[in-house]
Image 1 (cartoon, each protein chain N blue to C red):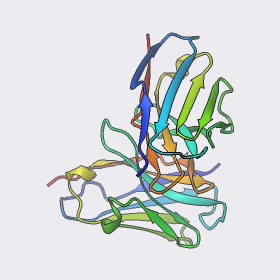
Image 2: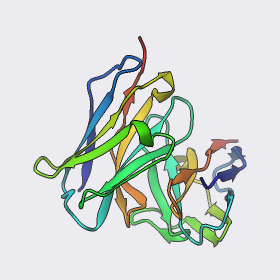
Image 3: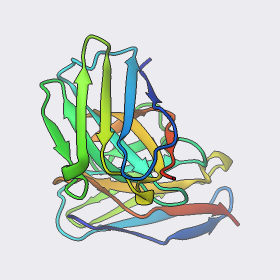
Image 4: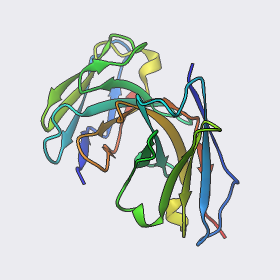
Length: 119
Length: 107
């Protein structure tokens, strides 16, 4: 059974960098069958796709975050990561990592981690 | 970006009712559409992909249809476990986008 778990340092101050890691178990992120993605959800609001990464290292970012966003992967640890720089209160959200089958559909998700941007 | 609009935003139903949720895309997305169910404090769960393909393990009372710009999610007989918020998602072109959600409440 594939499992994903987000981890991160907790609260982030405005203008700092938000860093999250997703650890995958029960499957390899080096598989050519899947992409791996990040999705966020501000409190009480809907879902926003952030970006995704393929085993080859190819990345796809939502344009509104592209200038601040980096998604990377560490195949030796079976992890992929998100770095979002220059954060503001608008970046406060629950951040989910997910496996994307066919590069599109989130069939396995992490439990989500709330990241609060506050001074 | 492709805009996804769901209707209604909230829906009240009784157990056993047939429920239909609509999702409209701002431009054609062929059949590149998924439906997710989300319960409070939980991650979304994939129900339907490719507009009408039922994800493994999802009860057959859920079905999806449509293509182009108009899509529907139908629950043939709503069960207590189905009261949740439902989202559509398009994957025709980047960035992938979601509808705003439809909350299915108990009447």
